[in-house]
Length: 269
Image (cartoon, rainbow, N blue to C red; front, top):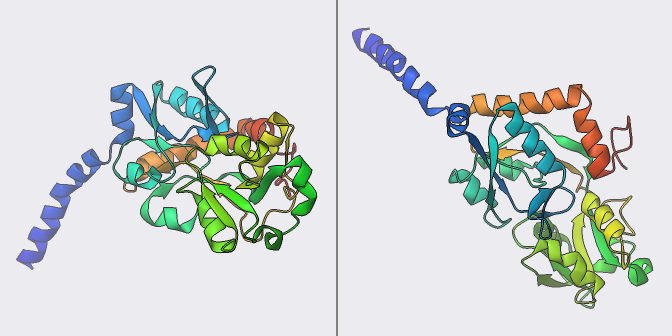
């Protein structure tokens, strides 16, 4: 009994230490900045505009809202799709926003916020407008004669390897550059998300997204804000911000502006 009491007493003594170690919110406020990891290569989520040097997209707007809610400034920390998970787990940033898909693999090793963009995301293709009628299904893509360009490290690459083993896969480091590569004929297809495809068709008249209204089966998903595991207080705060934006209509307006959500609609498809 005495030994049991000593164990309980030791655990009680450790409680304040655990509380002190889980203080990312306090750290951010004390620092005066929130470090936000982002790839900056994904229109309309997070795109570093080379002409202005500024980040654009819904995730850039959400980043500003989160920073303003804490009365701090943003310190962007560049990351890449191949290094995103490792950078997050190493604590190189406080949160990451760049159109990050919520999935089981990420949730096992990292923390993810509540969803946004629900019903708006799914895998589709970008191709040249002159080729739009050639591609009506996955079978039309899964041929050696079809050159498919993908960026490394993300879900686009995983989809291509899993579903298009017979196609000619070309890995291109810069996701933001792939649509231009397609338009110029250096590849035939880009595997992408519906929201990115729609945005690029508006920007580049040589491109088409013939399957955008029917995303590939099993690929619909939402996005979330990524962070290290272990700080429930910080995760609760990020979810609180998203909940407030959802309640007052701000999130819907951002999704209408950037993601093509129809007013008062729950999904695109």
